[in-house]
Length: 438
Image (cartoon, rainbow, N blue to C red; front, side):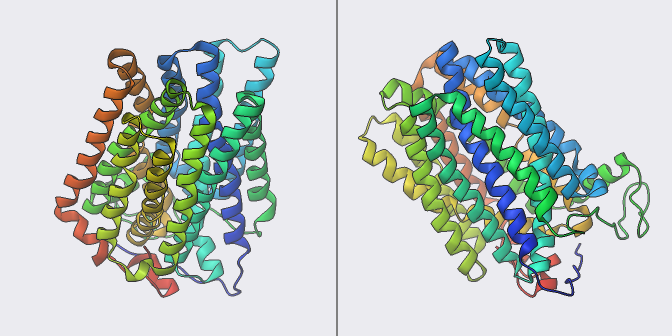
């Protein structure tokens, strides 16, 4: 099932630059918070279990709200959803250090503030992603390149954010990192609301789409649940997208436990401190930028399936297992650097597959459902990792997660659906800009 996008009459890079800039600042703040918040909880409670509970409180509403807001993004338009949710996130994030400084932040209130941030981040991230194809149309660049640049932006945020976060936590304490997170949300909201050209990010106009209750006529949205059902029906009919969701869902669960609990506990028990968290994540992010840049330049000429699984092999199990071996820090940094390079190829490929196979007017709904299903295990990741550390200790937990990651990212590739990755090149919305995406 495909659609054709209409090129705007005048070429402009402003929409693409605006969306990427807003994504960059928002994600940078989130990456800073990903170091500052767990360290804040560990420093104030000393409990790995409570650290996992905070991660659960943020990611559960993230996943649930994101899953349900796809029809709203299509109906209201991604621009309105993006700037309003970022504005609310900025307020909630700013209240955490303010209330703590005044001695008014009990643990239950911290959980509530974190839950608000998660609930707003979900639709905000979705809305920015949905605007990428429209921005690519305005810039008249291949969708492959647009998703590659989006991947570079994400990787840059994953480089700068942890480096800034680790430095801030080490020098000024975790509350400084939380304050920076609030500021980046506010800046991202302003960029989307004021910097994008007029008419960018408008509500989607559906075409003729069959659903279980009959076709939606041109220009009609239908009710909320009808729109939701159309997205679900389409996603259910796509075996490749479902295979991607299952695999990424498992790795996301493992990554969540690794990053929110296992890495901070490793940093504390090894004596390396929060600076080591920032160093490893920053190095991984830097090499991921290189990988994403190469993907943006040459991905259209590479076999997607092979590159995808090799990338996962490099970025998955090795960086988890190396922390269990007690090796010198330079070895840890090297493994994370190689893993980052491999990870740089993943999101451009995933984004290309999504935008090629999903009609533009269904993008918000299908994207929301797919992301939410893939992220469904993330809220449990921190809880499971925290419980595992408390039950069996850090090293057995790292070994178990590493083995599970390796099995997931190798055995899954035997499924026949993955052959569709390369067969779908050049179909869907990418036909409107003349090239396939990766």
